[in-house]
Image (cartoon, rainbow, N blue to C red; front, side, top):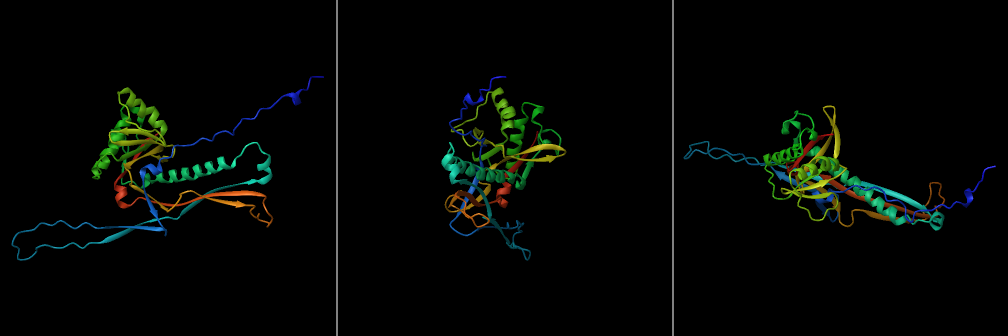
Length: 300
């Protein structure tokens, strides 16, 4: 019969568990953060503009007419609560090789922040203006095809800046652009290298790639996607930093609750520890913020 030596063959375990993939998170770098000491609602009213009239000197009638001023209130409500929870049995904790508690808490924190990031970048839907193919010499109503020419990526960025300028949003070095990493590498970076440009950079982290003509360029896998004219498109988000408002209560955004030996559904005790990480936040694009945002629609 054949040899059977399997019980003499050693198995080796990695010194640490594998790292999970992480995305770049950009939300807190482009938002206005509003922190409330207490309460759940931030009121932000605005007034109507007065009407401009023509005055004729020395009138017998029809002189100056005053404008009725109306007010509108907009609210940011801190009411979105999310959590990530896990528990570890005391016996597993005692016998297993790896200490997962700290790693899982870090991972839960990241997942909560990643969810916020996705929600913030979805605010392209509330942008006051849009750039599509018709703005760069391509088909109106369709996403921009970056593969049509080497300069299409810069045409898209400049068209976005032009749309903001048409809304009286000036580039004072405080504009941002969030694009998909693939678009940045295959088209943006390629164009910059081919044309001898280099982004002015400092510390490259959280998706920040550097500044291009007063625009802080970020990349994120969380940019919104949809279907436009039967094509899959990505929504680059461009605008003035602070155009999107993010609300939270004072203190840490991510909170941790530790429950020792929690009760199970049948009333018995779970011998171990339950960890609950949670957040509470709100987001809003106010009327002024919408004017300062542009949605750049990119075909992929």
